[in-house]
Length: 142
Image 1 (cartoon, one colour):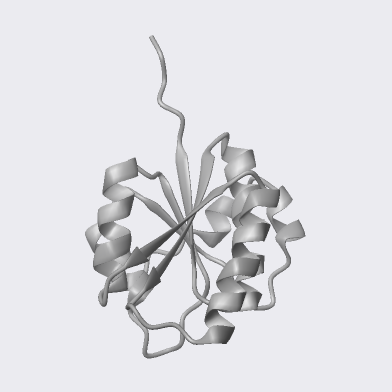
Image 2 (image 1 turned 180 degrees about the vertical axis):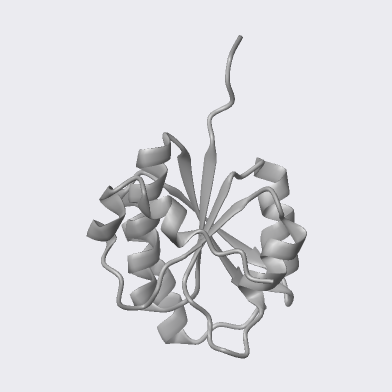
């Protein structure tokens, strides 16, 4: 009997500080024995600085052995949900969106079986070497 390898998806935006999400996701994926994929959703328009940041994040993804995919959609929740279902992801790792952003709570609502982990801005990837951090970080917002 063969077991399917788990999949971890890290969601990033066109910001250099999303490197922390990739690094933390790499630690989480390694602890879980999961494959890691990096996803960014664009609405079709990007500034030059966002493109530069995405290119930088792509290089970080390569250093941790992950593939990076750019999705084009004006609805990031829909795009990520479809991608998660297509690759049968077990984990979704995100940053911490602003207070008015409902990205995480909407993902949790439409993907109830997926572990959604939010990486706070000031968090170091080193904090994710402890397997118990998965239990502390799972974010099931209602």
